[in-house]
Image (tube, rainbow, N blue to C red; front, side, top):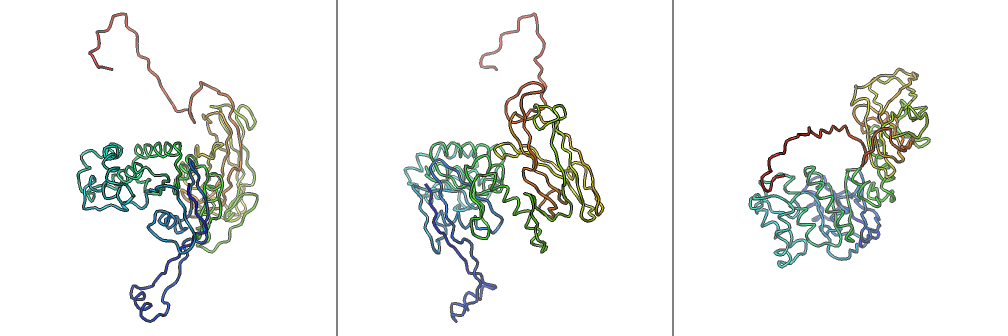
Length: 411
C-alpha cells in the first residue's frame, strides 16, 4: 500500500552559482522558487498499478525521488507498507568503476537488503539480467540497455512491497522489455503495489488499473487509463499552441487551432453498410474537411482503439503519401478504406489534422473517439489475438517410403 498525502516540494533556483554564496552571506534573497509538487495526494493498493503521466517538468521525477527517499518533502506525508524499490534515472546508485557483480552488492545494500539476502539471490539476479561474462566487467563499459537490465534485476529481486518504475525501462531492447513487463505483471498478481511513470501510452493503458496526470506539480486528472491518456495527448497538442501564444478553442469534444476541421464523418462496413461489420471486411471512413485558411502542410491521421483504450492501428497521410494542401474556404471529401482484419469487439476512431508527421507541432484538429464501430463474426478464417496477419503454411509433401530413424535427441 502506498499513501501520499498533500505532498509539497519546491527548489531554489539561482541564476549563477555565486548567488548561492551571496545569499548565505548577506541574507538577501537571490533566488527564484520553483514549485515542483503542490499538494499531491493519491493511494495505490495491493495488487494495483497506478500510471503517472505528465509533460517534462510536471513533477514526475521529483515524486519518485521523494518516494524513494532521495529527496525529502517540504510538507506532506508518504506512507509505504514494506520495502520500496524502483528504477529511477538510469545508473542511479551504481559505481561505474565497479564490476556488475560488485554493483549488485553495493546497489542491493542501498535498497535495504542484507548480505544474507544478497548472497541468496545473487545467482537469480545474474540469471535474470542475462549479462553473461559481462557481469564481471566494469560498469563503465556497459551500454545503457545493459545498465537497465542490471538495475531492474536487482530492484525486482529485492523482495519489495512497492515497486516504482520510470522511463529507464524504455532503453532496453524489445525482448528484455517484454521480460520486464511479464515480471511486473507477476509482481502485481502477487499483491505488489506499482507506480508506473512512462511516456509509453500503450503500456500505461495495458498495464495500469488507474492513471493520474500531473501538470505544474498538481494532479489534474485521476481515473481510468484511457481518459488519462486522452488528456495527456490534449496537453501535448496544446503545448505548441501555448508556445506560439495561440488560444485553444474547444467544441463538441474536439480541440486544436481549427485552421482546418472535419465537419462530417462516418464509419461504415463496405458490405454491411452499417457500423457493425465482420472481421476481414473493409471499413470505409468518409470525411468532409473544411479549411478556414490556406494551408500547404496538412496531414490527416486516424487512430483505432479497442474497448480497453489500447491503440490497435494508427496512420496518417504524411507517412503514406506526404502532405496535402487546401485553399481558404475549400471543402474536400476524403475516403479511407481499411481492411478491418481485427478481433470481434467494439472500437473507436480518433481523427486528427496536423502538420508534418505528428500533432505535437501544429495540431489543427483532434477528436478522441469521434467515431465508433463494432466487429462481429468473421468474413474469412478465424484467428486468435488482436489481429490477423498475413500467413502462409506449407505442410510439405507426403512420401510412401519410410523415413530413416532420426538420431536420438533430435527434433
